[in-house]
Amino acid sequence: MKPPKSVALIPARSGSKRVPHKNIRVLAGHPVIAYSIQAAINSGVFDSVVCATDDEMYAEIARYYGASVPMLRPKEISGDTSPDIEWVSWMLDSLKKNGADYEVFSILRPTSPFRLPETISRAWSLFLAADGVDSLRAIEKCQQHPGKMWVIRQGRMLPLMPLTPEAVPWHSSQYASLPEVYVQNASLEIAWSRVVRETNTIAGSVLLPFITTETEGLDVNNEFDWWKAERLLTEGSARLPEIAIAPWR
Image 1 (cartoon, one colour):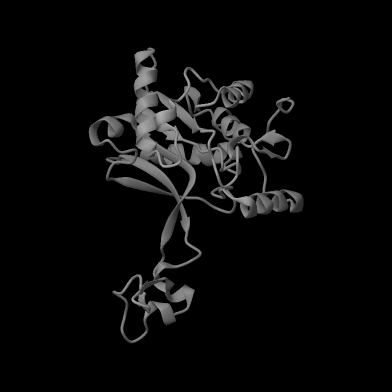
Image 2 (cartoon, helix red, strand yellow):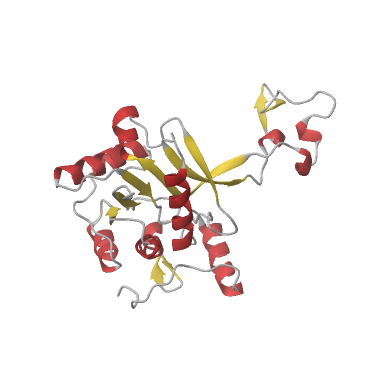
């Protein structure tokens, strides 16, 4: 059976505050966005790889590494509080108006540089094999368990998750004895385009878990994350998607 027509969407707005211009910050010689573009292309999964950016310089970099940028993302949906549904809906509609209608889209954020082509291929195979799902989302086992989290009310601590066993509450238990809890990471999402149009969400209500391993889900969003990424590369504990061309400029 012919696979559905699919597009990889690489979001890269220019106004990040914690790490200015984080989407094009250089990691191991290349702007970090290059690794997501190359992973998408080399996975062989997508009919097109499109960068959704509001900045012409970002667009130039994305094109250099093989993505298309058919139009710039409007500033009004590129703020630091703009929800994903706004730019995803705008991008899918814009592409459709230009004659490129996709049944499936995937969001591959530039801040997950260790997501490899084989990571995407693995997720794609799971998604296509699953019946009745709206989307797939990358998750990993949480390191900070919510059973050990607290809220403060009127100067007193209360468990964030109060429905725990009275005899041995979760906050007084070892991690290994607690229920497995997963947290989403930014490495990838895959969804049917109909979900956006029918539910005005990017995920729908039936989500397929995709458990990332090792550094696949590592997100570089602050200075410590960058230090960690560079340290992992120096130690040889992680690898990036291969890029065969010279660094941009």
